[in-house]
Image (cartoon, rainbow, N blue to C red; front, top):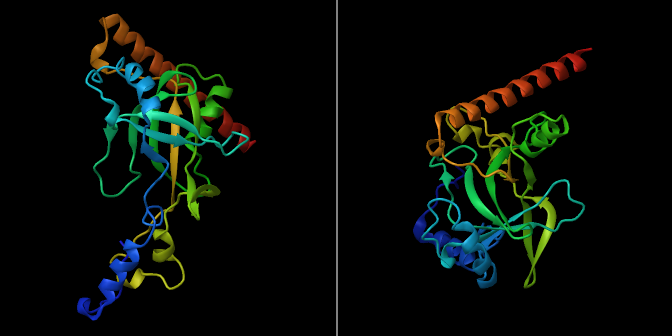
Length: 247
């Protein structure tokens, strides 16, 4: 939490702050314009597709949003567009990576996907989740989800009345105030460590179903067996890569 030095609320400081805040654009106030209501055309196409997913039978057009996803490995800054209802999974924690999971409609490929929105830790040595999937698929590890795209969420600024996508990405700044020059350590009990985070989105082509929807005990055991086999292959790959780097 970042806070100001004490001030007298009646001396005009609070009034000036509210006046300035009122005259900021929605972007400057922190509104994420990479998420917006779906337009009528997108919603008309997306609703029947999304209703094919269990528990979306009562879905209406006004429930839908458009989420932009950038691919770190794409040659251009043009984002992919996905239409989603409310998140199927979300965290209530006040701290952490603010993970949200969506069943989404992929406008470009006309199919359903799983969209994961979260804040990744931005420190050396911590690999992006999308890059992990790319390495696993390159090594032909079986029984893992097929990835569609993944990348950092771009920072959109306003140039006059026009929104412009920049090369910069959405990232936290609290760590700059806690650990930088003129830091707030003296005002923060315990001198907490605050990691830097970058807003990140990942899209998987594989859309899962609930575990209680298996059709037979055999099918359930097969799914568990496939997962164990895939996990074991990943562990073996990590072991051999570690040995190779050590040599």
